[in-house]
Length: 287
Image (cartoon, rainbow, N blue to C red; front, side):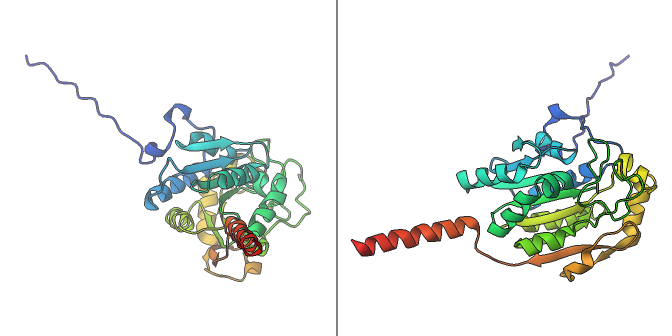
């Protein structure tokens, strides 16, 4: 009887080339949208032909803060709220690097909110991707500056009495040169937006609306993760360059997505170099 030949078939995930296999499986809950956003990010890296040896991913603390540890590139897991200043240091020390901050709403616009607005004001050459799931998911689901008005969390069990940030409007007002928002359901558009942002210089900001079924979804009776994605499909309105006051988010209102800002402005490093050149020329004139 002839011997049976055993053939080993190895299947690879399409994103595997950009991830650290030894760090998997990831920590995210079933139904969390962060993994979808990472998939879009990896696809955008490939689409934009980004060199992994030049790419730096910086994250802070929280569920989204774990992204840096999974990326197979130069990556930094920093202290809470300090991802942006770490990233600024990387960029100024080596401007040849492609520096991306990938973190959550609590890390970027709550504890790190001061760094966020001033990095945008200075137009530092960074791409900031903010996963907005409307709460501090890792620490139990507390309210934050993006929690919907009347949204229920562990710290607002009767509903949030505070108005949330409108992140695209905040980024644009502070000086960002590229501002966009997508949900994790808009995978292809999110990928294209990240790839487009890679090609620009200056402070670029992309908000990614993501479900948190374990905490925020459960407390606000939004259903399972698929139910939330269906709501995204029903409520999403694509409106490029919409007036930013229309980008407010509520528990049951429309979710306006699209590219809202795309302008050119000298970066912080451009301004520093121009100042150095003026100083050198003035010294030469005095000699």
